[in-house]
Length: 132
Ligand code: HEC
Figure 1 (tube, protein in one colour):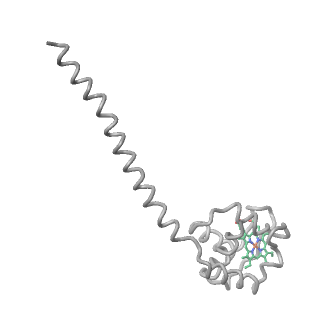
Figure 2 (cartoon, rainbow, N blue to C red; figure 1 turned 180 degrees about the vertical axis):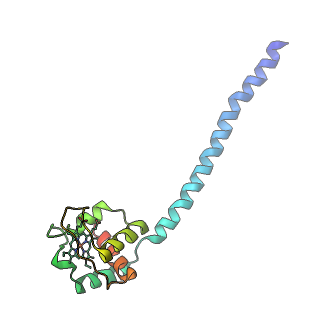
């Protein structure tokens, strides 16, 4: 009598973990898909990048920066390697361009650009971070 009872109980335990495992993997996939879409939406458009490039050429940026060689400030290509191309970097670096500052690439400070709008500074950052 005891043996007959043990077998079905064991069978139930064997099936249950595989069922619940199947459900968790399904949930995880949907979660990943949801989190990637807002990040994609934040990535720069071709128009933003082109405008950023033009704004940068009009400003004093190239007096201290070049695309691929360190001058007074870091090469833009090295900035593009250091920061991910996302909304958080646009905010952070636009703030740095407007307010100036030192300490990330060395002790020489970048001069502030307080007349730049946040939106223009972000376009410049989008251009710089597109230079991988
Ligand atoms: C007077 C020289 C100078 C000018 C002009 C200048 N920069 Fe810089 N820039 C620097 C220096 C020096 C650094 C490194 C600062 C540091 O180490 O924190 C830097 C850093 C940066 C960084 C990286 C910031 C970080 O925190 O990693 C970006 C992006 C940048 N500059 C963009 C610009 C743009 C865009 C302009 C024009 C609007 C500009 N810079 C004008 C000297 C300059």
